[in-house]
Image (cartoon, rainbow, N blue to C red):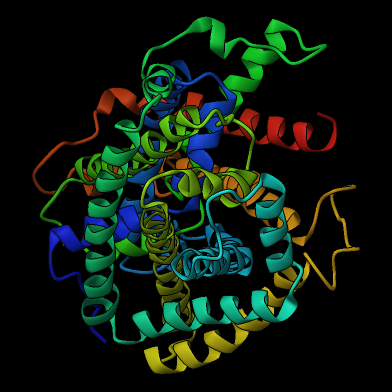
Amino acid sequence: MEREKFGSRLGFILISAGCAIGLGNVWRFPYIVGQYGGALFILIYLVFLVVFGLPIMTMEFSVGRASQKSVASSFGVLQPKGTKWNWFSWVGMAGNYLLMMFYTTITGWMFAYMIKMIKGDFYAGQTSAQVDVEFSELISNPVAVIGFMILTVILGVVICSFGLKNGLERVNKIMMLALLAIIVILAIRAVTLPGASEGLKYYLVPSLDKMLETAEGQTVAARVGEVIFAAMGQAFFTLSIGMGSMAIFGSYISKERRLMGESLSIALLDTFVAFTAGLIVIPSCFAFGINPGQGPSLIFTTLPNVFNSMVGGRIWGSLFFLFMVFAALSTVSAVFENILAIGMDKWGWSRKKACIINVILIIVLSLPCALGFNLLSFIQPLGAGTGILDLEDFIVSSNILPLGSLIYVCFCTWKRKGWGWDNFMLEANTGKGLGISKKLRVYCTYVLPVVLVLFWAFGIFSTFFG
């Protein structure tokens, strides 16, 4: 059966960016910037995005396009005779399923908050404690959480069920273009709020003092290490590289364009959305005297109060959470496409059969996370205060993504036992546009693998001993 192809280059860029543009951009990025000093942190993040993210994304696209397969089969097609790179297919497959096991629950929360905003459940004069109660009541209600999770799964599968062009590409084009329009409107509103100028200064003017603000008992050296690790982590995870989420889209494109240029386009769009999300959140927080670096709770327990304090806040809040839903659902549908392709490539399923099996499978697999905040809240796998979501996120973000990226790098640079640098360069630089330089061979072969191992080790250490 002939491989499906994207209808246009724009579709490929928007869908690939949509996979990368998820909650890590619009939820995590603003509060991470708030925690680590604003503008100077962003500059460090951008450096890591270029030196780590772009080469690895180009490698993943190359493996996908050369093999014309998903992560389930791509290594098996390209690996030299007698090697066993294809074992990674099981890890990549597990990573995609694990991501959906907790991402569908969080996306469901976004749906719930959008509906709450539209209904007017948040209102002017509401205290922070009352907003906290709204969130606590939502996640402690297993029926509500499971219901919104199921809605997310069904929407993701329905989008993909119509095929690559008529389903995923068509719907994601609409969602992504709507997302970009909404985020620009919200950013204009945020930066024009009275008192937002201090937030803009914090966000746009680099300050070493702000970045090096240490916690009680923390040394400056420890703070610098913490900031660097956070910037590297944000740059690394924002592109969704390491488990085949990008390789699948590489398998759907022609050889008309060089892959480094395509990776750069996707990274620029991804960064634009993350940066603009920060323009919404941080000036708004400063305008209403709120700390933008308070962590994951910022979106659910703080921003509703910000919107309540604005003129027309119900409309702005509804638009914001609609934007969040589009960002999350674009990732969900893109990863679902990868999961469906795994079934079609590895076991020869039809798209219809893959949809039926996976809609049931992913709902069942997502139940532990959905119940982890209520009926299963007694399970704290990583220590007190953690939950099932934390464990699933730890497996994916701190293990599969960095180690998977290491596999892609080694596969594309090892001459005898891997696919090899020459084959990678031939594939990556086929077509027109920006290519990858041969001068990067030493860096990609020797430096990048060491950095990835150190990054993975630091993440494990900080989780259990930090």
